[in-house]
Image: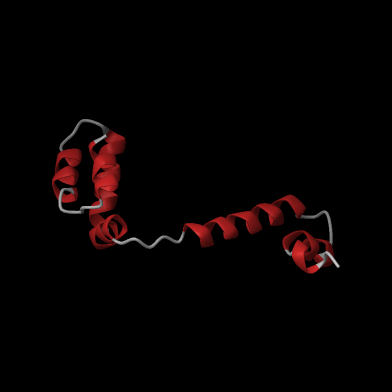
Length: 91
């Protein structure tokens, strides 16, 4: 809950203290998360403080990969294009 509060508060200053406390805890998954966060603390700080997100791009990539997996071995390139780019084939 404390880490969630740090993320929602948009201030990265408390992250270092949270990481120290998490590493000293008895909760193995939390300890592992804290160690990974410590490895790239600059990226963590930027993710907390900066307003940019790549969520839209990741969502499109996820959609395309899902379609590709669903179509694997079932159809040729033309049908795959028709499913991935429906707005181009609606004429």
